[in-house]
Picture 1: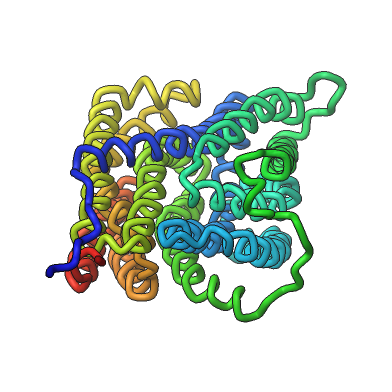
Picture 2: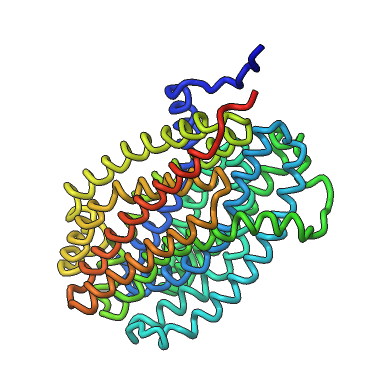
Length: 455
């Protein structure tokens, strides 16, 4: 008598499940991208110098923040595998240890951003940009502890297939940032205008509002009541925190290296002057907004792959979950590339009235259209690998792709060959294309080692 295998549902159902799960995640990430858009629009209307300062300040903010953000990404696959294995009772204890990790990471990042204020000169940032960038960093650093706590709570909810709060709190933060950012940048509603520094303070205020709102939601929601998330106080557990770090820290380093490719590009362009830095910020902001869509689908794919793996669905179930994410991402990336190719000048014109800034920014957006497909493939491959808790080798592949190829190629073309920002963006195309090949191949190899569905 042959054992009855655990059923693996069809691809169409997997595609629908992933789309439903990814929808709020995409919307939440788009809200995050729109926050960057609001910052850039307000800064651009305040002046080219303010936009350049916010460009450099944002780059220096997100480079260290990507490490805790990625490290805490250990939570969705951990939670989804527990959920798939029918062990939801263990989720609360894992979450409380993740909170300790978030607190420690937030304190560390606050210290690093405080130090970054004093590194603008040694990094070679143009003198005209330094004061505004420093003011922006001094303001936004106060929101860093809130941001790490917010990601911890958000990833818990996402890992349990409940992604609507990500969307709701994402857009809620955006609604707060618009009036606060305007008031503190230009001076309104009784507040003095602080330029780039005011925009940083407004962003910090928004981050605390999001974190407090999410904590209240988890505390009061009947959906999470059975998990007893806040039922007791757990001291730090080195074993559990270590387990999260073993999975999460390589993710954090990988995310930081990918983001570091863009941040490093921004900092190198910041050495060229205000025109180049402002144009790069326009193109980076719009392309980052496009990236929020595949990034959200990739997070949903992490959850689905983790759930399939934890539920014993084997190679077929894991690959179907990954393929569903890939199909969705290819569709969204084709749409993004089309928009960038046809609307580059109009989009760049939303940010600035400076014709030179708009012209250079539009040319960079055409290059951004080229890397949409490889960017989608690499991010969905990385998400699928996280669902399998395969994070160390992808970290090494990311280092090769983003830095040894992408940043080095961009620096050579942009600075060495004198091609300026356009050369730097060609480096982005090269790095993301290599990442798509290497990470895609890694997932195919890793998933091939899985057996058939468990009985």
